[in-house]
Structure formats: C-alpha cells, structure tokens
Amino acid sequence: MLTPRIKVKPDRFGVIVRARTLPQVGLEEYQKAARFLADAWRCTRVSVLPDGPGRVVIRGVRSDPLTTPTEHRPTGRPLEEVSHWELGVDEYAAPVCVSLANVPGVTVAGTPGAGKTSAVNKFVCDLAPAAAVQFVGFDGKVSRAEEGDYADLVKRMFAFCGDDLDEANTLFKRLVELRRRRSSVIRDVLGVKNMWHVGPSRLWPLTVVLIDEAHTFFREYKGGDAETKRLAALTAENARLVEDLVKKGRSVGILTILISQKTTGDAIPTFIRDVCPVGLSFAQKTVEAAVAALGDDIRNWPDASPVTLQDPAYVGVAVMAMQGRPGFTRIRTPYVSDANAARIAEATSHLTADPAVCLDALLDATGHTGPGGDGPDDPAVSLAKP
Image 1 (cartoon, rainbow, N blue to C red):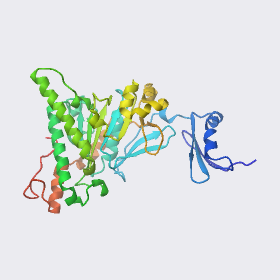
Image 2: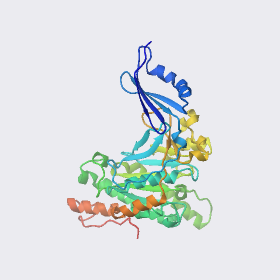
Image 3: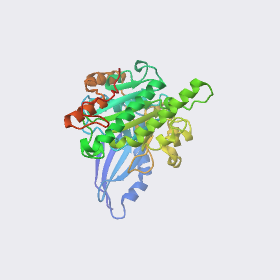
Image 4: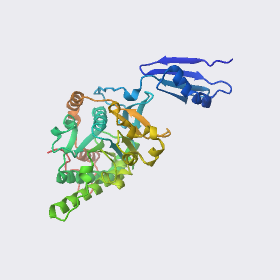
C-alpha cells in the first residue's frame, strides 16, 4: 500500500495539510474524499486545491471563520499597493484581496446593521495614510457628518455632503468637472491615456467617491407641485452626473463606491449599477435583492446566497464573485472601532487635499495649460469643504 507524504500545519481555525498525489489518486480523488475527511476530522468544511504538479493542499476548518468575529486595528502605515482592498478572510480563513486598479465602480448592498459601513470604514482607514488617495463622502441618511457613520473619518475627506439634494448636486457637478479636466490633460501631463499605467500620485491622487445610502440621491419623485418637480429634476441630474463619473472616471483615477440597502433599479439606476464590476452583498431578505446585488448567477449558488446570512452570527459577512474562482465567495470582514477610525483620521488629516487644487499644482509644475485657460495660473473651482 502506498501512503502519501504529508506536511501538517495547525492554526486557530483548523489544519492545513500538504500532500503528494499517487498513481490513480490525483486531485479529483482527493476532492471526492473531502466530505469524508470532514467527518473523520470533525471539521465544519474541507477543501482540496492543487498546490503545484503532483501536490494538493487540504484545508480543514473546525472553527468557522465566518461566524468568528474579528477586529482590525489599522496600523497607520501606507499600504504598498493603494489599489488593493483587503476585505477579510473567506470560509477557509484564506485572506481575500480585491484589486481596484482599472475598476470604475463598486456596489455594496445589505440590510441595516449587516456590516456595510464597517467594511467601508476599514477600506478608508487602510488607505488614509497614503497621500496618493483622497476621499469625498456623501451620506444620504444624515444632514451633517457628525450625525452619522463618517463622523470620525470626515477629517480625512476633502469634501462631505449629507442628504441635502442641492448640495449633493453641486458637489457632483464639481466632481464631473474634475473628471473632465483630468481627461483633457492626462496625455500631456502623465504621458499616458490611463492613469493606472503609471499609478496614482500626490498631485494626481486616486479620488474615491463614497456615496452611502445612495438611493437618497437618485430617488424618483412623483407629483405635480413645483417642489416635487424640482426635486425630481435634481435626482435625475444626480444620476446622470454619477453615471459620468462611473463610466468615464476609471482611466483618470476616479473610483465610485455606491452603498445602499438594496441595489435594485429603483435604488441605484441600472445604467450606473451594471457598469460597476465589483459587487458585495451583506445579508439580504429576498432573492430579488440578492440578484440585484450579485447578478442572476447567484440563483445557481443557493448555499452562498446573502439571504442565508440573516442570522446575527453573520453580521459582517459578505458575498461576492471572485475572479478566477467558480461561484461566489463568502467573506468575514473585520470590525473597525470608532476609536481606531478617529485615531487614523486624526493622524492622517494633514494628507487631505483637494484633487482640483492638486491638478492646478501639477499643471503649474509641468508648465501645462489647463483646459479653456490662458495659462497654468488659472485656478479651478475647489471641491473642498468650505
């Protein structure tokens, strides 16, 4: 009888076993035996993946990573790659990281309290120490920043808007103007048509547009009175402006993240939602909401559906489709405390800069003329908080 050589490494969640294949006992045979190994090892789940020619790696999980709450303490040090979003760990406790390079938009859905804002807070805290990243925030459930989830992070945002539709419309217009200016000068200033070919910098930062409770800004108002018509016109224009940012902002370094309880067409217009290639969903109450967030293919993977995440044990667990993996991946996202968020925002507030002013400085430093101007000294309209 032939016995494969193995190497065993235990960890807090279970065990990792690396083994060699044998004649007539290859990857497929190991995978077929996974459920029997789970019973024998008393594991919640077991996976078998290739680990190079003639090798497999067997992951046995005894303590479920998805139901084990974790907390993240941001280091305050810049990441090596600002385009990487480290989301958390999957159901086998493997780290999950998403590349946001060349990504125009991200949608984040889920019921109230399911973990959406905490996941975004971690993203902001991890990127805040980088001068090559700037943030602008919209929060449709508050009137002022100090009332809501971003009270601790607003110091690291160059602009913020609450649920005032007029203010939001003005800020959206200024962001679109920034996009247009960048588009008109990128080849002359950066020497490329796509910012991601050279990467973001202090004077051409990745500009992250966070739109929380996004449905507030796109709501379809119905009624015949003058005020209702005015609000309907505003939200319709908001949708067109955000569509511009999502469809045309990728190559000039603008990333839009839309957060809403549901990402159905009445909450986020489909001409915006369907252009966002990265979608996460925390717990959902209906299959229809899950399909809106993750696409129709989620119907074929009922075990991974966010509808199954309504138990309190799954607060902070999201579902997404991962490139290179079949089906969908469930991810435990870590909690970031308000105190840690405030600490990072305070420590990095000096890095906050208006991208429009940064562009002026870059044009001036390189001796280029901005669009429609007579020289590099023509100032742009500032996006920053008054």
